[in-house]
Length: 471
Image (cartoon, rainbow, N blue to C red; front, side, top):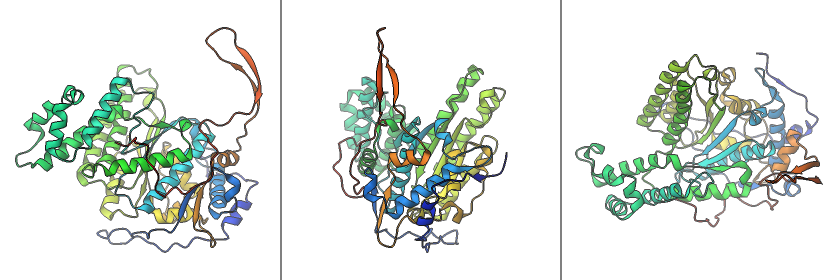
């Protein structure tokens, strides 16, 4: 497959400047398997979006993130020439954990990683969609009026605070009644003897969350800006607060992703000539999974093994057309919880669709990820890449995002990502496509990247008004 390599780059001075402030890594996870990983201190950082590049050009984070992404773009291994070439070769779905239980340091880490993915996706015009575990896009173009009504009714029920209120909502809402929820509530098989009203309510919430899956759409990268992504994340966080009893969003996200993979196999079973669209699902996760949830996810993976046996002769079933690449922030997770995620990653050796990369969010905010770790995160659908072993220190870069004279982490703008990737907008003459036959040739023009708005950088961790899109 060939050795790993990095192409020489003319902008190496970024790396030299970034190394002038070496990171101080003092937080180490505990060694006892019964001890929680070292809890990262709440950072005194400001996380900003650099939509106005000259304003923060000399900040350590800008210099360092440029150097890291330049090196990652130049890094090649196992026949792959660049970490980021894959963004034009596969579909990407980005799921962001938006539980209200996440600490501020974890929220900052989630957003910083999401900003970097969005910047790269928009620069390369990748087919990338962003989702939140507690906030569907109720105005998504894929939703019909009927399904939009179903989603809103289910969202309203999901916010119910107790069993009697939920029952009253079902009896008074024609949409919920039509979805058969009155029958589900009346079915004793859905409960066990001794269930309190509180137990029944939690089970109902889990069922409602499952019912919402077919209507749960996200936001395409081309329709986002850095500022809108930030606002959506805070809105999703606020939405999660409205239902503290529902804690299974990560499990449902895994199961939804695996079921999507299974549907590809079902299609191949009926017609082996069909093609499977190459898809990578990136999960940015920091919420724990319970042992029963880990087992449920493993059971879902078992179904894939059986389906794979049925379609193993299809060319489309070979290779890794589908991958779930999990970036797990471990700073607030216990050893046993982390092992549960690792068990999912290691569970299926024959049909290995899961990949796991672990990060401590405090160290991540100090130095981001190494080019090698970024390469693995984006290209884990390749078996040899997935099998690459990284020591815990190898996951982080050698650059400091925080300098001695500032406490701000400024994310790169889309324009800066385009510069890093060597992408230039070239004026071209185009034919204006229309429904009639009188197409006209337009003069050369400079096109703006879809979805990019030029706005001043602002603090993303302060309170913002919500647009009412929450559940």
